[in-house]
Image 1 (tube, rainbow, N blue to C red):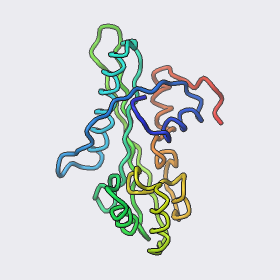
Image 2 (spheres, rainbow, N blue to C red):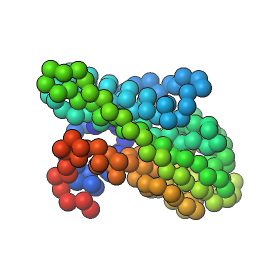
Image 3 (tube, rainbow, N blue to C red):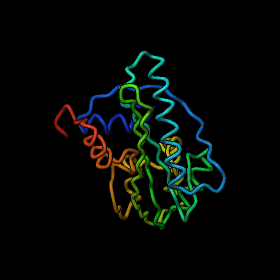
Image 4 (tube, one colour):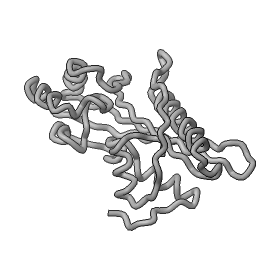
Length: 199
């Protein structure tokens, strides 16, 4: 997996998959005006391709399957990335307060079959999340924990922000950062199954 996210690693392990991590940092800059679904697909593909190239440099097999993923939060058609600082995190959470937003995660699978060209498959899952009204104090208290600083839209649903959520429609694992139902279906199509029983 081409990801440094501990949340994605934890999800894969919980669902019974064996995997190895490959470091492949990429630019997360997006073209101006790009649509959210195109943006998240592009980032996941960029990460998976960089991961594949890094894996080859580490003497990995050309037939190995590389997974890349990216998650974005979309509020009223605006993409919310990771906050630049605490003030930015507070602004994002204030914008999400009392509103419904979408969390979109793209997965990209890259592999080469024998001497064929690289095969790249992407898919996107979208989950709708509604926050209750948040007070300024609880936003400040949450930001002070430091948890929001490396998260899209400045929150972790599996952490302190779980209490902010009124309703989720769709996959909860998608909001954490890896839509396991979608990924499992795509892996099964390729004959890849968990090696351990799902917890």
